[in-house]
Each structure stands twice: as structure tokens, then as C-alpha cells.
Length: 481
Ligand SMILES: Cc1cc2nc3c(=O)[nH]c(=O)nc-3n(C[C@H](O)[C@H](O)[C@H](O)COP(=O)(O)OP(=O)(O)OC[C@H]3O[C@@H](n4cnc5c(N)ncnc54)[C@H](O)[C@@H]3O)c2cc1C
Image (cartoon, rainbow, N blue to C red; front, side, top):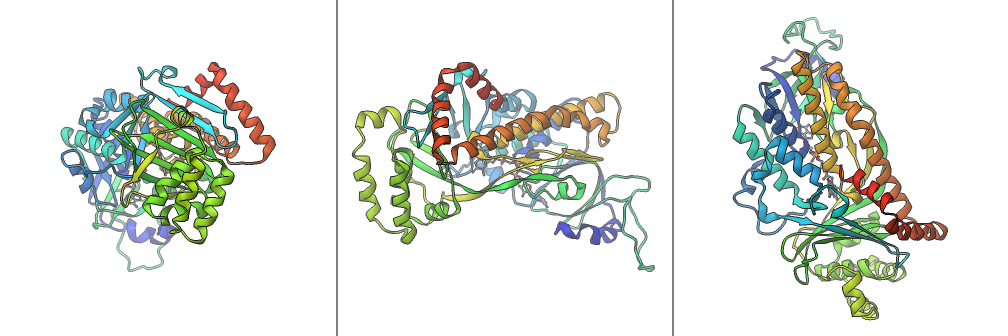
């Protein structure tokens, strides 16, 4: 649709601008809602006239606080203590969290499928999180708390079920050869972008923020380049039940050559998985029966990859072939019970109906996050492999950085849409994001090989990393910003 931006420019510019705003945020995901809540919570920026536009419906987010669905939804993220603190201290929204649906956990055990003894344990003691490494929380719970805070403050407009159809620059209309066309009716002299909505409205804004995800229409409008690649992998997510509640509050991640598989704890006997897998394997994981799926997760956390590949081969021919159940049980029975209890997560006993889904995994980073009158935040600015659970957290630190830049601009009486104000947002966030993107990309590459010399090096690295607390500390700190 946005390939047609230039073609539609004249028509849009000649549309009646119904409102002028200081900030229009496109996208009501975690990043967009967070920005609106943060702007309205800051005494320096709360006077700004803000509108948030979201293409989808926010109805289920509005009802989540009072009336959440019985089972956990399948989009769950690991929030760092820094993100929680930001929502607590700067936005004042954490009080609206649905407490029954979050799980604090204190450590994560990462281990290698090719090297049995290669393990790293990340502990809460390595972060400043007061005994907490991270908090597992549904995306919808985060959006719900942000929306509650926005509603509490009032004085902003949220348009959901409303798509941004087009964005045009008033000073750069295409040459119109139609001499009978209506003259331009934007506010004269304003170089502010005009956002044309599916409800027929056109809003002209001093600052346009793209919180509109990976395919960001705002980024395309701004002409900011984004570079990266597809991993050729899918993240398969699902909500599962463990055999019983895991009081250890530990997350587990096994690095398989197809990609890492993580089991992360939720309240009671619930847990969530993210299984990065090849297109072929992800296809199998979505097609197999719930019973086979459960066995597959248990097998993939425990068995050798040779065994796993054999099982995948059987299921590729027939995803309903229940003979694999016996195969898996027989192979698992060869591992000592004490070893299973000590070194591996609790067995999975059930997968919640319809909770399986898959998402393509990619790495992307915009060359910059700002252009005149435009800023990008969240996935519109960067997407990262989920192996370190950082995407949404990076979006939170973008919001913190952008609000800080805007606060300074307001304090100094400057135009908040000018690059002079926006530049400090880029310089304070881009380098750290770039480093994190690089670390996760390299981890993905190092772990998704079965090339023996590399596997050997990796094993040695994992073992020695566990001993080298300083290095481990650095890694944890960089990831728990
Ligand atoms: C499998 C998986 C596991 C993950 N695990 C973690 C984790 O543990 N921790 C973590 O921090 N992150 C994790 N992430 C990443 C995290 O989910 C994302 O980074 C985060 O949800 C992005 O939020 P956002 O608000 O930037 O974008 P989005 O959530 O994509 O929101 C963009 C919004 O913009 C709207 N929009 C787009 N175009 C238009 C338009 N034209 N008009 C109006 N609205 C529009 C869309 O409807 C959407 O609501 C994971 C991701 C995946 C795929």
C-alpha cells in the first residue's frame, strides 16, 4: 500500500486536515502505548496534544484487566527489571498489572544439544534486579496496564480499528497536471506530515512516531533504510502445562542446531515455550497432535539430535504417526531419573488448545531512528532474534530515550519535531541496540551449526563462560539493560 505513497500524495495533500496535533503515534502495540503513557505521565510533556492510531481493535486489551481469558495467551515476553522499573517509576503503570498473570523468575539455565556438559546458568545475583532475573508477562497484560494508565490520565486520543492509509509531506506534493484539481488546504507554511486515516480523517502532526512494527509505514514514509536479514527460521510459541508447579522458578533454554528451545515459567503449572525452528520443523510442530507435540518438547529438551532427527523424519512423512510416542519414551527411559530431575526442566504434560503459532524470525536495524518530524521506536526501528528475549525490552528503552529527548526539547522551548531535538534520542539508543542485535545474531549463528570444530569450541566456551563470572556478568548486564 505504501508503494503508492508518492502517487497518492497530491490527493492526500488536498484533503481537508481535520486536526493539528503535537504527536501522532502510529501503532498500539507495547511500544506505542508505552510512549503515549510516558508522554502523558511526564510533567514536562503532558501538555502535548497526542493521538495514537491503531489498525486493530483494542477491545480485548481493555477487558483483560477485569476479565482475562482462563488460559494464558501465547504471546508472552520476558521483561527485564529495567523495563519493569520504567513502567513503575516513569510511567506509573505497573500498579495496573494483573498480578495473577505474571511470574518472576530468578535464573535461566542454557545448555548445548551437542555438548552435554556445556551449561551456563544466569542468576538474578548478576543483575540489579533484587533477586529477580526477569518477569514473564503476557503482551496483552503489558498493553492492558499501559491503556489503564492512559485512561487514568485522560487528555489523549486513541483511535483503534483505524488504519493509517497514507502519509504525505505537505511541502512535497507531486506535480498535479490536473488544472481543475482542488487547491491544497493544509495549514499554510507548516512542513508537518499529514496522516490520512481509514475513518476519513487527516491529521497534521508536529512529530510523527512510528511504533508500527516491522513493516512500519512510517519508516517507509520517512525514507529511513532498514537493513538485516531473515533467519529462515520460525519461532513456534505455545502455552504448556508442566507435570507440576516448578518452585525453582527457573527458565530453561536448549541450543539445538535447528535453533534454541526455551521453556519459561508462568504461574502454577503453566509455562510458555519459544522454539526457534526451521520452516520444515515448525510445520511439523504445528501439524502434530497435542500428545505428540508434548512428547516432542520433552524429547527436544533432553535427547541427542541424532534421535530427534530420526523422530522428525518419521513425522515429516506422517505428522499423526503415534509410533513416535513409544520411540521417545523408550529413548528417554535410558536416561537416569536423577539426571533428568537434576539437569532438565520438569516434563511437559499438556499443550493448551489452539495456543500453538509461529512467527518468522528476522534481524533488522534502521540506519537511524529519526528524520525531520519523524521518530521510530520498537520493532519499527529494530527486530531481534528472540533467543535473549530482548525485543520488547529494547522498545521500552527506546521510549525512555525518546521521552528524555522530547523533555529536553520542551524545556529549552524548541520544536519537538526538529532533528536537533530528536538527534539525542538516536545517539543515546542506537549504539546499545546495535550491540545487542549483534550479540544475539552471533549467538544464533554460533549455536545453529553442527560443524564439529565449532561445536567443540562452543562447548569449551560454554564451560569456561560459566567459570568466568566477569564475562558472564558483562553478558547479563548488556542483556538486562
Ligand atoms: C516468538 C517471539 C518471542 C518473543 N519473546 C520476547 C521476549 O521474551 N522479550 C521481549 O522483550 N521481546 C520478545 N519478543 C519481541 C516482542 O514481541 C516485540 O519486540 C514487541 O512485541 C514489538 O512491539 P511493538 O509495539 O514495537 O510492535 P508491534 O507489537 O508489532 O505493534 C505494532 C502495531 O502497529 C499497528 N500498525 C501497523 N501498521 C499500521 C497502520 N498502517 N495503521 C495503524 N496501525 C498500524 C499494528 O496493528 C500493531 O498493533 C518476541 C518476539 C517473538 C516473535
